Image 1 (tube, rainbow, N blue to C red):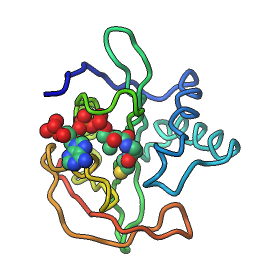
Image 2 (image 1 turned 90 degrees about the vertical axis):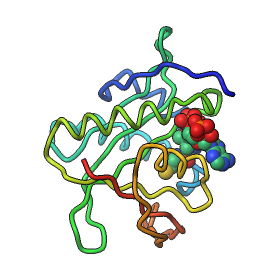
Image 3 (image 1 turned 30 degrees about the vertical axis):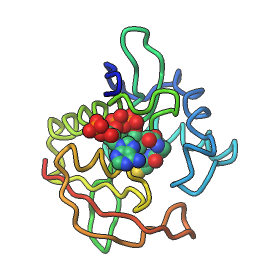
Length: 168
Ligand SMILES: CC(C)(COP(=O)(O)OP(=O)(O)OC[C@H]1O[C@@H](n2cnc3c(N)ncnc32)[C@H](O)[C@@H]1OP(=O)(O)O)[C@@H](O)C(=O)NCCC(=O)NCCS
């Protein structure tokens, strides 16, 4: 059995910019259209900083205890999906820290945050059909698999995904 780690999520802040660069590696973005340019990473950081104030979602850094290493990201954001307004959730954990239950713990805390916020009734996640670890996170946390779908990410590029939904 793999070693379990204790993690917590903290709202995205200026000190998390370097973490975003580390998340932008080829192995981290394999299911997400590949690494982004420096300008795209900087824009992403600005979006993550602004989203809480806009009320359209929330982004978090995942922090490992007790040493407070920054090991990943998780968050949720409102979007249009098949003509409906939905809330989507996404996550990533740096390779050196994978397989220790960190994604499961962090996603669970982000779900709890959305639940307490009270503004949304359901959350969707769209892991790639060929991403077993990410699909396992959905299954473990009680999401219901609605089926496969074609998902446009990044804009202009289509990938085969699973549509998972969780009632809050
Ligand atoms: C997906 C990702 C976040 C998982 O992070 P993690 O911290 O390693 O996840 P956890 O340790 O919480 O593991 C979740 C479950 O996945 C399972 N899992 C891992 N790899 C698996 C595989 N190849 N097949 C089946 N299950 C797998 C684990 O066994 C674990 O379940 P368990 O605790 O019952 O054993 C991480 O792999 C990642 O960041 N990948 C790159 C970015 C990415 O794909 N993001 C998701 C986009 S939707």
